[in-house]
Image (cartoon, rainbow, N blue to C red; front, top):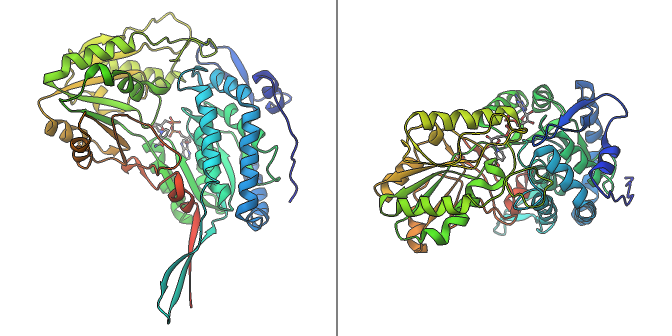
Length: 477
Ligand code: NAD
């Protein structure tokens, strides 16, 4: 296999953009904070997708034949290449997605991409002896699947692309990515940097809208789809992949509950509660999206959250002091504004925020905390995916558990308590793929992650994540 192996280092986003943009034409991408042009992207056609899949299919046996050690070496070299271009990538990500450079945002995301890429090289995937009784020997092997299609969202475009491509490549598959139409440049740039070190044909990106995603998820040469996005689109992908019986990993929408127990010190947990909810300005799948607090400490928790939230600067991502940014797009801004208005109209009490400045440039929605809200209000029961947290008063923990479990989704959840044993008892009663104790959304590349109920199926990360990108094969003799 031929490896490009060129050491390229881009000093800033402009240089990186110059390398990935079409010479002419393309679709314009605008900064959600300022409305300024970020760059142009060459949208892929159906023919481009077919060509990418064909190239990936042709490259797959050679990539697989390299073996685990050589693929690990190349993936670590790709992580080095991302590190060498980290600042240019973070700047581009900030301008296209809107997230600030600082805080748990753009630089953090590029660092996460490096960390998850290296983590995909950190495990051995060995054949497993299932039966060996002297008469029967049955061994389970993990074979490559073929070509994996990866379809991603716009909230963490670089990190989620790595979650999809890194385990796929590690296990000997080749990959065709379809980024969100809102953040294509971030993924095209990331793939461009990675492809400096990978052999040709192994990793492709085809930007485009829903139609490209539909074609990818029904393509006869695609063995598996890694999908992260909304539950609605996940259901469409189940349908469009059915005729070819594709393997699916579906990381779908969530509406994560946080359950506070009466023994917490509100001031001590307020900052972690805040970031659990407002990381990436609330545009995070496993963010804390509804908080249940017992009457006894309700006012103290509300006050402590207002105190922390009021101090967090929101603004244009490239300005170093900001830690919160705009919504990424107008459609998401409208969803958040509509849900908060619904809460206000119902008589809920705004502790902070709401009332966006209609004249401001950019899709900035103020950091919003809403108290005394009906548990059935839409701001509680629907995924807001933005900087607005409803705080629901409950009479006791049992009521909080029932409300937490009352929705059709179950990605993550959290329990907040000074008593870990008690918190674990409550955690066991929550219907969610992950329950964090005294934090929320603190994902880790070593720890499997996946949804319960309509938040999806399949596990990412760790050894489980690698195995999910393989075809188990039993050889029995
Ligand atoms: P989305 O479902 O609108 O779009 C995701 C991707 O699917 C995009 O690339 C889009 O072009 C593509 N797509 C749209 N229709 C398609 C179809 N019919 N067939 C194939 N592809 C299609 O999601 P979004 O708005 O980009 O992302 C936000 C959602 O993603 C939220 O619900 C959030 O909770 C969820 N999310 C989940 C996770 C997780 O790990 N569970 C992580 C991040 C985001």
